Image: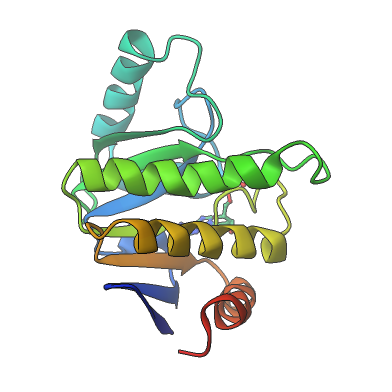
Length: 185
Ligand code: ADP
């Protein structure tokens, strides 16, 4: 399903993000940037070792203590179809009273800001934090869609954002939230 936001498009699809063609695909990374499970493992496995090499350099040069939650960094996309992988660290869910929403919003916001700064026009996100980090998908979908909407309304460099949902169930949850928050497409 597709929604129009300002001069841009938000698309919601059911897919594997490593198969998606976009200028940037987003990795739900952890602060070590050294790989992990879920979407992180899928991106490194299919993208090849060049991604991890760049992550290691970023750790050495810029983030010796790890990438803080809510931040984003870009690397090569290796063998993937995308031009870049943007790695962002979402919050771990601890019940909702520990700034989780603010930090999740920051992950989406900083990723889009970095993509725009690098001249990238299309960005594909997975559902950040809703796997290993246990953020409830419905709550996360509202934060994600609101952050994307606010960003696209504020500045016009990004032309297309895709939310890549890994199950029909997640696609249904995101679609319902998008219809509520953005109006029926
Ligand atoms: P986090 O640690 O931020 O929770 P996960 O990778 O564990 O990150 O999960 C985030 C979301 O990504 C989950 O909804 C999971 O089902 C989904 N996911 C896992 N693999 C893929 C993939 N290859 N493409 C798209 N989404 C994926």
